[in-house]
Length: 316
Ligand code: UDP
Ligand code: MG
Image 1 (spheres, helix red, strand yellow):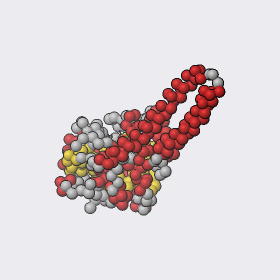
Image 2 (cartoon, protein in one colour; image 1 turned 120 degrees about the horizontal axis):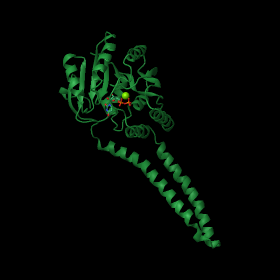
Image 3 (cartoon, helix red, strand yellow; image 1 turned 90 degrees about the vertical axis):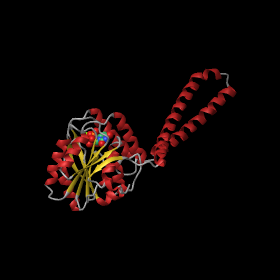
């Protein structure tokens, strides 16, 4: 029975993956307890999988899952948790932005009795002002928009106890925001602080994906945008009602009706804009409802190594 499962989502990480493996290995060896390194290959297009195979043959603590295509970071983490067999599961990025050495501190906290230990970054080295600003805005927005408490400045780098993992495995929602789900589950949670390093080679989360991710985070945990839509609807109807009275008055008691063209045009443009925007908000939710009702699997595996994939009898 392994004690620790290290879940590492990888997408095109051929440049750094050996280094990542070495560093994590070095840290885990210090625990003197059995562990597994579970890599989840999210449809990499480079030699990542070949390197994983090579590592797995040499070292039997290395296990991997290989997706049939790219399913995304959050889904990769989910798959890792599904197949992890440890009593504590640590999720860590492959790009070494999260220092693996911190895992020892996490384990220590876990042994003190905490069920979730997340890493909280104090500074963001080597990230552009834009990334910092958008990340900050995102967490602020998330905090105000959702009822549950998602800690500021945390990523997915965290340790979770098996019982938390068992709860997460039961949550099969499609638009996944794993750190939100972890907060939602509850149990005894704590943070450790660290400085985030620069990314070692490879690509970044592009802006388009950041926006998608933020929308998933907000829509999965909050109805506030919908409430805002109806509030705005009421407000604008009220304003329109007054405007209608004014228009009627002008029509019946004055001769100045023709001059109203510009205000009419502005009103039409403005209200159309608002209506379309609110339809968009509603559409974001309907799209996600549609995704849920299709009940497709979250991911499809092509192969697995050392994870009992052969047995074809995994929970999900
Ligand atoms: N990743 C993945 N699928 C993706 C994008 C990223 O599995 O579609 C992996 C990637 O290999 C890395 C981790 O998820 O291990 C975090 O990715 P990245 O460093 O790009 O995110 P950021 O550091 O900007 O949050
Ligand atoms: Mg990164």
